[in-house]
Image 1 (cartoon, rainbow, N blue to C red):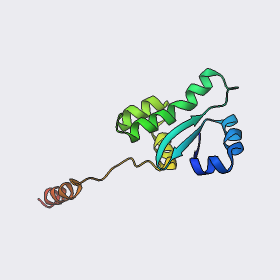
Image 2: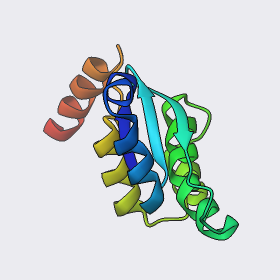
Image 3: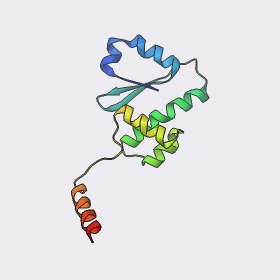
Length: 112
């Protein structure tokens, strides 16, 4: 699967269309998945297999699915899905305000 952004799509739409002949093209708007370009000559089975990772990535990024759920939906191996998320710039682990507390708790536990 290919990914592009709106700016690149505006500059060279024919590139995205050529890439769609090989695999669906995920169009990003900022850091959010925005659209999917699918070539119509592909079979429905092949299209479904290609769309699943993009859909899973978008649902994972939005917090609708867990990593495990998104991986299952994607239909690809966990390692491949993690790499795919990395290529799209989607963080697998999000840091929040509890990370410092968790780290201190872990340090105390390891010292005891």
